[in-house]
Length: 448
Image 1: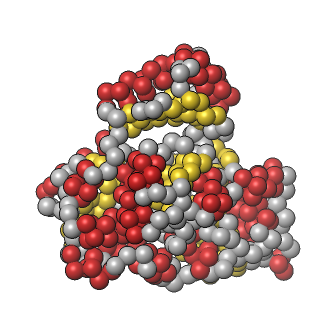
Image 2: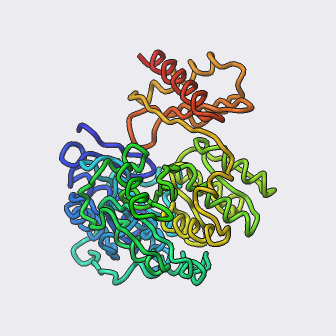
Image 3: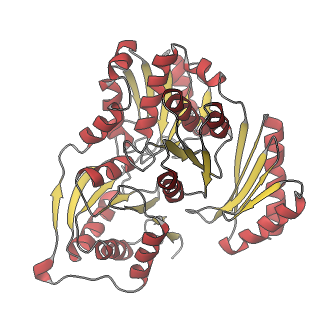
């Protein structure tokens, strides 16, 4: 086994080098066991390896008595929506999110349409490591293809915004689906909102035209296309369409962090309530919550942790700074389609350009880097940073976060890759880059 990462959040690996059909079938059968043979919604992103994995998953689910409700190629948030819409016992999305093309994975969903919480994830791991409960020949499950799974998702999104007002604006949008599952619903949703849409990578075949993660260096063609087409906005989805990065009308990459910032600004301007983000998310959302007089909470990193905190405090909105907005009215899962709708609705309300709106938000620069490191050495990196930055306020429990009055830095182990993530934020680019570089150097020295 070369690359296979198993956690309470699911499974990722390199197909043919760690992620094999036997193990995938066992994972699916273990999910079927903990849902006691109930109905399971199944969908996949556009990766070329998805069809092979689908067959392995169907075998495991049917062998444990499950009725498989197959959506075909669909986004991760659509899978979550349809779990609740169909009253299923669980769901399973086949995706490796932003990982390179050779990767794929399995992401399980609870009956609430959210990713597994810690307790459920640990139950799944226990079954995987022991033995799934296979049914006899007379108790095998079945497969049913679900027609038009996207209509319910779109309906929920449209309830959030003034559809008629957005249609009247006739926005021009460039949408970069990068051959992911966002191409199934994304162009349709935007056109239903009256947008003139230029689609890039609109076939969900997983043949990425640029690296899968929607970072600035990977979106130069989108930035150029926004300018060339005179578009109001450019949207970039990751392969399973739960994350969104944004380019403004000037061709400026405003990134993933401000996807959540824009959504929070728009939502809180209409209704106030608690906001939840993770410990790696920009201070922009904290400042916006304070501006509108709303309670603000940080969870540990990980979608499951954000969702758990949102449910605990009855949050109005939440998410992660990787471009993942979580809107409870649609589902407790990150959703790029909600993000797009909120940005367009916000432009209607503000009667301004996206660039002008962005410039009204709190101004910070966030810098992210990573360092390959065994998980067991992460504590050494944390200890080195804490010793070096004794003037900062330290928050432990999810790696280490160090806060000053005007800046912060965090070092923590990735949940999905064998790396340490280092994130720093400050009011200007130079200070943020310097702080991140210092932290990387300290961590690298500590984990040698």
